[in-house]
Image 1 (tube, rainbow, N blue to C red):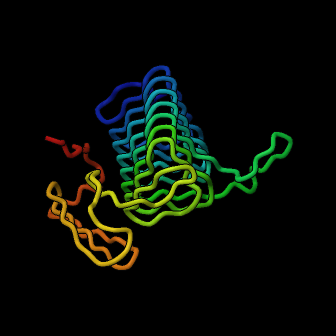
Image 2: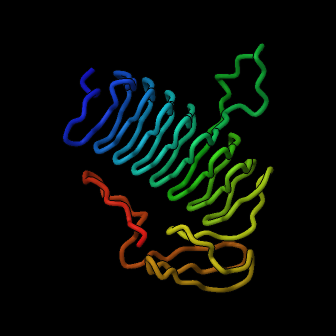
Length: 219
């Protein structure tokens, strides 16, 4: 089909399948043996690693990165700059049975901008993952999370905070405090048990549509 070539703004590997009614944005790369199904939406500047799958009614935002063998099932929505490490798993039925068809009762999972899911982690359905959440490798996320939360374990528990740049924030789980990121100029303000981010001079999580993305380099 027309999408399966390397052009000026899109690459789909010859072994990958992008169905006719799928939507794939500019500057996105779809790698070996991947499948973007009819009705799936994938934004700009994404990378879909080997053997990934995006289902009908699934949404992958802009600048997302899906590691090898990650599946984004129906009713899962990723906002921008979401990182899914290899072999992490989304589920979409709380109590599946092979003898029962529950397609009509799939639960929505919303993943907000800047979130990271570690390798071999699992995310259950019907939750909202707060902005910038960092789920550690091998963890199981069973509940909604606060923005910028660092979640570890199975079931995952909140043990700290992680910045948009990807560093632990030296603030307690609750109280009052402020921390500035030396890399981005972002300021994080703790009030009670909620952390808010004031973006620095150049917001690394503000997506610019229609242009090839240059990700921030670590020097």
